[in-house]
Image (cartoon, rainbow over all chains, first blue to last red; front, side, top):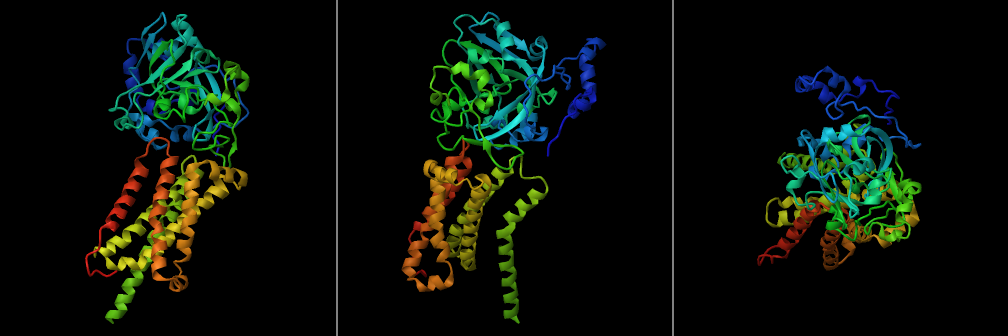
Length: 309
Length: 202
C-alpha cells in the first residue's frame, strides 16, 4: 500500500501527534520568547518543518512512512528491525549539542536548534540501499552538509570528516551489548562530504525526524550503503588521516571505508546484484552508486571500483 | 473401558502434538492476514521457516534424551513425526527461497550455492536430510539393517550443526541467536555421548 502525502501540508497535517499532546509544555517552554517566535517557529521544537520543495525528485514511489519508521537498523536500540521503533523513545533529543572538533576554525559546541536554524531546509527524495540488499525511497528534509562544512571553515590539512553517534546505554539499550564498538563512528572524505548530494537530515516526510531514524540530526549519502548514514550525531571532527568507521572495525573484509553501492562487488557472504525494494515482491537490479553515478562517479576517478566497497 | 479411555487420551495427546507442529504455520498465516509480517515479508517468512526448522531439529534431538532419562518415555512415539516436521519446515524454507526470494532465477541460485558458503552449507544440510526422511517410512526402515538405519540417522547431529553454521554465517553482527542454538545442539550431543548404564535397554 502506498501512502501519498498531500501536495501541500497544512500545519495540522504534519504535526506529530506526540508533540500535539505536549503542546502546553511547548507553549510554557516558549513563554517569554514571545508570540513571534511561535509563528516563526524553531524548526526543531515544532513538528512541522518549513522547507523548500524537492529539487531531486525521482520517478519512483516513496516508501510509506510506516515502513520507513518501523523497519530499519539502528543497533543502538537492538538488532531486530522492529527494535528502533520500539525503544528509540528512550532517547532524549533535547537539549542536544553537537561538538565540532579537529582541523577547523570554528570548533566548539553547537546547540542543535541553532545549527538547524542557520541553514534553509530542503526536501530530498533519495533512494536508500541497505547493505543487506533491501531498499527504500525516502523523502528527507535537511540541509547540504557542504553548507555546514563551509561555515565551520576547515583548515587546509583537513581531508576527512568524522562523525560520532551518542553513546549512552541508559538511553540506548542496544549499547548494553557489545555488538559494535560503541559509539558508532562514520566518516567521509572531505570531497564526498562537500558533494551536493550529501545531506544532514533533520526531518522525514515533512516532519521532525523520528528518533528511530536518527533524530535530531543524521547523515544521508544516497550513493552509499545505509550503514554510512550515521544517526543521532553528537560529534563532528575534521581530520588529516582516514578515521576509523564502526562496521569496518567489526569486519574489515566485509565493510570498507567507502561503502559505495556497487552491484558488481558482492558482500563476501551475499550478492549485491539485486535488492528488494520494500513494498515490492520480487527483487530489482541494484544500480551502480545506487543510481547516482552522474553526480558522484567523478569522486572516484582513477580509483579501482573494486576497492570501494 | 480403561483401555478405551487410554486410547482416547492418546488420540488427544497425538492431536495436540500435531497442532503444536502446525502452530508456526498458523501463526505466520495469522500475521499475514493482519499485516504482521513486517515491511519485508519475504525475508521475514524465509527467516521464520528456517528458524522453525532448526527448532524442530532440536526437539527431535531432545526427545531421545527425554525418553532415555525417563522423563516421558512415550515421547519416543513422536520422534519420527517431529523429525519429519523439521524436514517439512526445511522444505518450505527452501521453496520460499527458490520461488519467492530468487523468483526461479536458476543461474542466480546456482551461483549462490557455489559462491555463498552459508547457502552451500544450508543446501548440504537439506540434501543430507533427504535420506533420513525417506528411511523414516516404516516399510523402508524394516527393509534396512537396524545398525545401518541407526548409523544413518545419527547424521541428524551433523545436519543440525550445519543448520546452525548456515544461520551463523548469514547474520551480520548479532550472533547471539545462532550461538544459542549451537550451544543447545552441542549440549544434546554431549549428553548423548555419556555412556549408557550397563543393562540399559539399547
